[in-house]
Image (cartoon, rainbow, N blue to C red; front, top):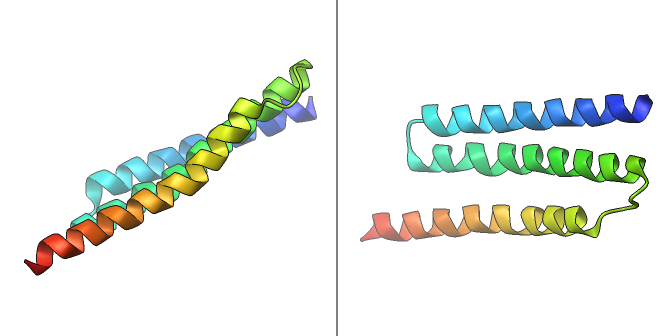
Length: 96
């Protein structure tokens, strides 16, 4: 019962972060602020959803799923890196 409530809370939190990131992407005025909103918010949102999935599968008795762990590690490494590379590319493009 407590585990299901925690999973539901993580899913709602993840969905809220994803919604805020999507709204920020649509409403921000320039490239850099548009880049900031989704990279931060969606990383947290997808991370919360993946953690909820890990908890759900561990409660079912399947054990700790290494797929979700690999997905979350890959996400937390690549999302900020891609945001940084996009910002550097935009700065170089503006210098010309």
